[in-house]
Image (cartoon, rainbow, N blue to C red; front, side, top):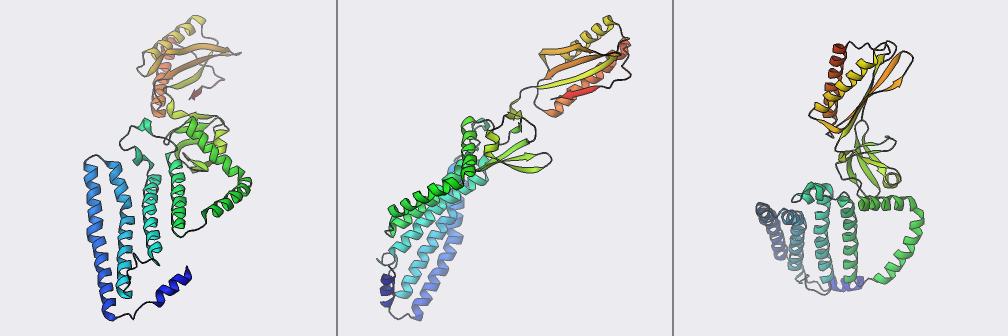
Length: 358
């Protein structure tokens, strides 16, 4: 191949100032055309598609803009060099492979740019769909697709130069087996990510927690190796996929109700009849609250101590919002204090209130 190029350049005639000037002028015009005609035209078509509701097509066109403009400039450069050398490079047998290799490169670059855009903006894929249709591992699959585009570009360009692809694939296969043994942990994380895709335990944006509560936060991204979770106090945490798949995961975003539970300690000097009446009255107040679930309400004396009774208060709030949960709990605590005061309930002197909400 090198010998062919030497033969090609040895046939070049003497370069003239007129040909150089014409080439520079053409190159300058090409730069102006791609900047002030092609680029605005593509942007205009993109806006036209968006107005017609074809958002996906518009974004593909806009992401292909750079590749289209670079391909156009490459054609201009080849024509300019052809003018200088007085040889038509685009169709000349010695340079045609180089030209078409560059064209293939820009085509695949356009696809890679589209995929890169959606990797950085995964929610844009679902602009015309409902949130429930979103797939958690779409960025994960897009990264795989991007790698596949690069591999396809490599093989397509190599085929133009009659490169021995079969031998290359054989070498890759043998090397891949050796590498697989050295990256078993990485493969575990990869297939852990695939397991997340199949089981669909959570979506991007869900609030999740592990069983031991060591990891809790909002899912930001799932990639080839890890899941990115935004926690309240530690910022972004990168968790290996294999770690998540081997532990129970609670998807707190899927809860439709929250449990509210607390204990009250009262003295054993209070009569049994009054305590029963107070428990029934408090249970009624919980039932009448507009945000509480009506099917499970527990207000009972559940423990006897030497100088006190423990009263269990347990109910559910029809919300997944922590703020609303605490607002309802606050209402019930104020109601409890009022009921106790009206009934003359005496609190246990040696005990404290223990309050819990989940």
